[in-house]
Structure formats: structure tokens, C-alpha cells
Length: 94
Image 1 (tube, helix red, strand yellow):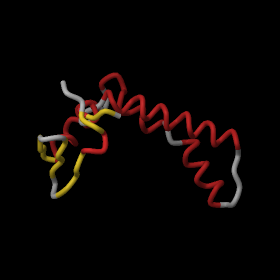
Image 2 (tube, helix red, strand yellow):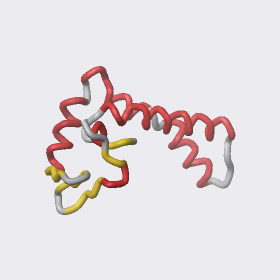
Image 3 (cartoon, helix red, strand yellow):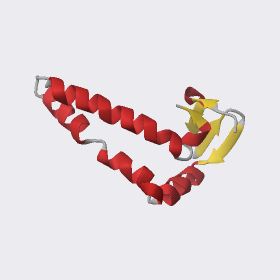
Image 4 (cartoon, one colour):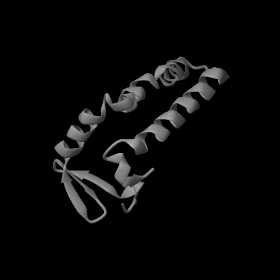
């Protein structure tokens, strides 16, 4: 399957255009729902938010915890490693 540059996805008018193909946005929502419990791949994304949210709260309060900053970076890395396993992200070069 040809990989498409991540930034070439266009979301407009209930449709998603990647490269030269156009899909209904509902198609990808259905794919995500079908994959949610398969090996817990999509469910894992919900787990990776603890440190990111805490980091947001601390920065909003005017301080930064170095450990939270590093752990939030790790969470973002885990999300970026998980996304390519899910549709529609399997079609994008993340």
C-alpha cells in the first residue's frame, strides 16, 4: 500500500481526502470503532493522557515539573507509535 504524506490529509464537508482518494468521514469512524478492542490498540490511546493533562495544569498554574515534562513526552511518543496501527492512520506516513 502506498503511504501518503501525513500532512496531505484534507478534512472537509464530511469527507477525507488523502492523496487522490476521497472517503466519507464516517468510514474512518467505523474503522476506528471496529478496531477499538482488537488487541486493545485504540483503547491504549486513552491511557496516554495522565502526564499530559497534569503538565497542562502545572503550566497553567505557572510552573513546570521536569519529570512530568519528560513523561508527557513519552506519552506522546506512545501515541505516535500506536496511531500507524489504526485506520485511517495506516494510510498516512506518520
